[in-house]
Image (tube, rainbow, N blue to C red):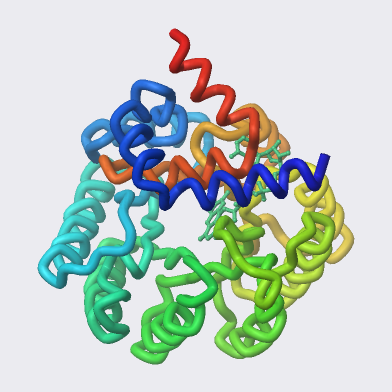
Length: 308
Ligand code: FAD
């Protein structure tokens, strides 16, 4: 039921910061099935995975997993890696863009550091005709993330977009403030543990806000990415775009690698644009824990791996 899932979700997200849980999962996670959600520990391992998805008519984005970097040299190194990955994507002819997290690029060290790093990646992406999506992290990072997005747009970069979370009360206001920029936005429910001060706690409330925001975005944004595995939301969006004559070049569905692959292919067959977010890297711990929190069955999947 919805309330059992809520308790489960909070429990997993709280356990994520526990030292013992972290040690155990980092040690055994790959063996236990993290590979279902992650395309490999290196970009070399991710390339054939991305190619296979492209061959099935699926667009992809990729992410070097990692977040919360507190060392300036390391944060700069992440930006360097992304520039190399962009060259590699072009050389391999992949239909793949990049989604990145600003705390991976040094946001915790200061807004200017993350801005300089992401600007370098976005500028490099522009030279190879690629696009950068700035993921949205915890509610405490929303102001800085949107400020950096605005700075990049003010610099004249159009090959950049960001993400809004339906679970936050503030998002409707944030969206209206962004609309004059004709932004390229991804809409998600929100993957982080947030308090009732800032976020809807009930799934029904998050879903209702999601539908409202999706319609506003589809009407007003230059491009909208509907990122969800929720079939009711997907059906609603299909119906809405049909009724309002919103062309399939103005939006796409986005799902995560390893989640609902059949649904991904079904939507492609129906003529919709579908992008599969396909991360790689050895820092998969937080990513895996958010995926486990989203669905009790995923924890069972991992625990079954333990028994093998
Ligand atoms: P839910 O109501 O959680 O799930 C609906 C149905 O989808 C479930 O009944 C189940 O059938 C299926 N499902 C959902 N999750 C899983 C799972 N883990 N395993 C198996 N089945 C599942 N969040 C952020 O906070 N910031 C971001 O930048 C961000 N980017 C994202 C990018 C993409 C492409 C996607 C797909 C999600 C992203 N998210 C991000 C995560 C998002 O906020 C949700 O936590 C996640 O998508 C699960 O919610 P849902 O919309 O699928 O709906």
